[in-house]
Amino acid sequence: MRDPSTITSDFYDLEALLDEDDRALLHRVRSFMDEQVTPIINEYWTRAEFPRQLIPAMAELGIAGTAIQGHGCPGRSSLVDGMIAMELSKGDPSISTFMGVHGGLAMGSIDLCGSEEQKERWLPAMARMELIGAFGLTEPDHGSDVARGLRTTARRDGDSWVLDGEKKWIGNASFADLVIIWARDVETDRVLGFVVEQGTPGFTAVDLQDKIALRAVQNAHITLEGVRVPEENRLQEAHSFRETANVLRATRAGVAWSAVGCSRGAYEHALRYALQREQFGQRITEFQLVQDLLVRMLGNITASAAMCARLSQLQMAGTMTDEHASLAKAFCTMRMRETVGWARELMGGNGILLENHVGRYVADAEAIYSYEGTREVNTLIVGRGVTGASAIV
Image 1: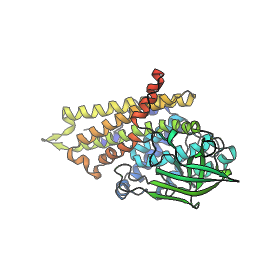
Image 2 (image 1 turned 135 degrees about the horizontal axis):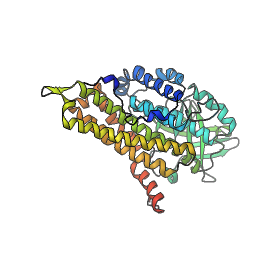
Image 3 (image 1 turned 30 degrees about the vertical axis):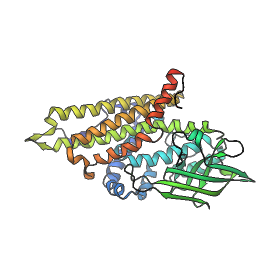
Image 4 (image 1 turned 60 degrees about the vertical axis):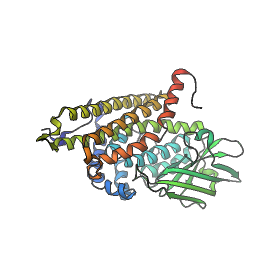
């Protein structure tokens, strides 16, 4: 029988694309997830709470804003950034999503849309995870159509802006120190970005209840009622939704990597289970149909990881387009859904018990499948690229 400690889902050794220092960092992330997250995450998932006591240990890993250059940020490659997202998700997709919101969407907004002064004001503390960020774009009635349908407003009033509206599904928002809020200027109709600090009068964030996926991520419904934000907190390089889209393009690549990680986590738990489970007097790994399921899962994982690795190379070269990121997000999340379903199938009824972990990946996959652009929207972005005709509306 194979030693369970030797199990890997990196069948084509994509980790070898990293240099020694980046591999060492990836291994530290893996150890953190195995030793500190896996033993407790089912409890927090069940209670729908984020294990905030782990944030200092996460900060010590030095992975917040992994690919951001300067201002106290790690400044590593997009490839290791993606593989870290994958590694986090392999351990638990909620942890990966938390870091994607903080280090990707929130820090990325400041890096791509902030002035040099704003970057220096916020990014070093966010990289040390002394300040936690959130990203408020989606609204109760506007998700896929938010570029055109954004209803949250910003009104200039002297040296300040007054924000009114609502946001929904905003991860980290109920405990974040800084929330990036995207709002439409009532005078110019332009979409602008604002950094709203926790405790600002008129800002409330209430966690959504009874989610079936990513339960350890605390998603909030935000209400903005006359929230006054100083001009110095308006992201100075955000002039339209185009800048918002630039942030989403970069983080969409990270979601594709996270989908691979979710698949890998389910596969590895299923394989460990199969190595010790006996039926009809023999281990189930000796049955043809079980091996078929394992190989199908591994094929999905390997194809998706290879696509993501190439996507990261394009990102590093500065040639990644919306279509590139959207194809990876759509493809990898579809393959993820298949893979976690096969992992549950392999485990039979035991696959729905939280103690066996796979059920958590099955549920969490549903959120990863939908956020950062649904399959349909990402498909139409790619379709527009290959045909030259927009069919989104």
